[in-house]
Image 1 (tube, rainbow, N blue to C red):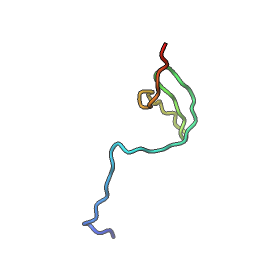
Image 2: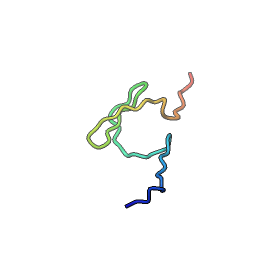
Image 3: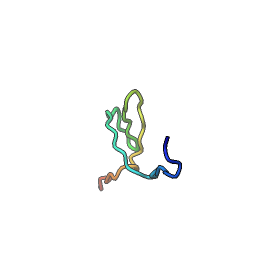
Image 4: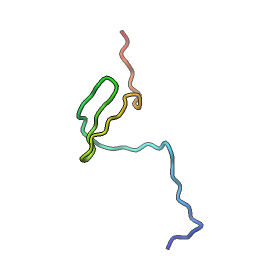
Length: 53
């Protein structure tokens, strides 16, 4: 049994890496399949530079 004085630390805003298949790209969202689920991710979550006209 674990020592009760030991505490586990949980980090918030930490970076994780997942591999997935890009299924669709729209103007403001990218839909990625990870396992059996398709997850929409907002492009604002990425550091993507918008093209200037």
